[in-house]
Length: 324
Ligand code: CP
Image: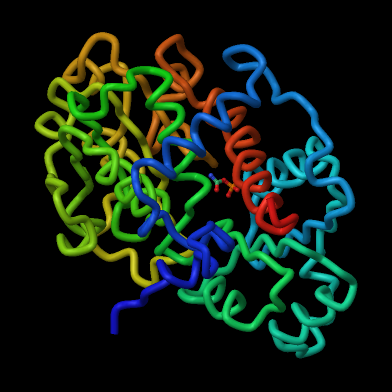
């Protein structure tokens, strides 16, 4: 059965209460969130300004999978808005003694945590929590299995818009392990809503997705064809933690030669094409290190934009909480 988180995300007045997926967020709402995020950036690439719009609120970071960027940026975003931020260390929490995820959530609710930021390896966990929390609590999906990573999708959309806001005339190429990538899913949802000109998903056959997961995208197994005249090139790592059987997945050298985003392969893209990567990167496998550090790379900009986007989402959720 197809999951429908879209209705669950909105309150009875149609305001965004939980962010579980970018599916169901229309172009107007996506644009407003990007505009709000842009407003938090004092200058291109600069760190977001501070405000007190979430003073008195508490954000709980519950990451049941590893993270550097998403967890740190939710923490910085919350602090920059004046909120208290609680980082639950899952490895030393009572989850290790068998406590259920809902009992963990109810415990934090009793401590008046207002926003639960959830990362989990299983499909459906953020929505499951959203269905069970009190009315005062919002749930933000910070990465769910291979299904959804909505704030990553927003920061990717913002980074692309900063390069060229004319989505309808852009060719975006996403290269790598598309089959297991929640980043590709959320980027695809956001870009399709914004009417992107062309979306290409490039991967070796063993890592290709089912076409019905990416409606409107071209699924391609040849890198030169996929990168041809692309405006945006996003490299993805191989999600080894989600792959049970590596049969058919090329070894490192073969992978880099055939699917690596490199100085050599970028010759197929437009000369001014930007290079993106959500991180964490595996240099020399899906991306050439000197390219990631070079002038066409916007990878660190993506990270900075991540703080601004999460501030924008938290502010919007906070306004609903305050009845504004
Ligand atoms: N892009 C991303 O989700 O990175 P982290 O796993 O470090 O949060």
